[in-house]
Image (cartoon, rainbow, N blue to C red):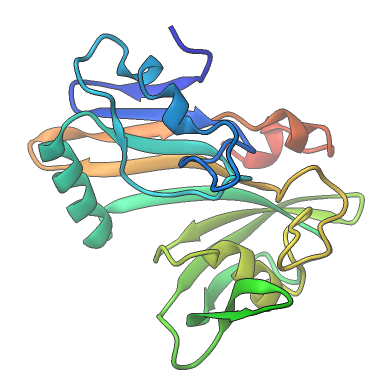
Length: 222
């Protein structure tokens, strides 16, 4: 058995509720990672499952694994064909004007010796589209639902700052890193369409650190 919550499981797929702060791959500096838990996640199968996509180390929530190479190929194709619906929850470190909208800001990667690398909006960057909806406001913070249409690196984090006017709470790269023990972003739901089979569908519950800020299940409107 594993202490990592299992949200969905069948013969070709596994979705876990990844803990915040646990990287998928082993960091260069060493330390724990999901790679160390691969045998636990076999759950009786002969192969260790392989992650299909990436979410940041700080991000909690739905992470899809493939149990075999054929499934990995099909799931990768589904992501590329945008047959995957992703819902994220983020705590924005300030007020958000409006109730909902769509942010379309192309992104590109830059780096410097002083600050390292980051993503920035740029006309010549890769297209990036994020739909958003305001869910609740508490103590100067805003709980926002994000539905990314594309899957660019740091997309929601950059779009929150550039499109909504404030970075995510706790974000050390696009914000000031204060107010929380991590970047407050949670992969709340994942749906992957499958030909000839029911879709993979998983939901990850609201994390305790979101609840500690005053947000609760009732704010999600589900």
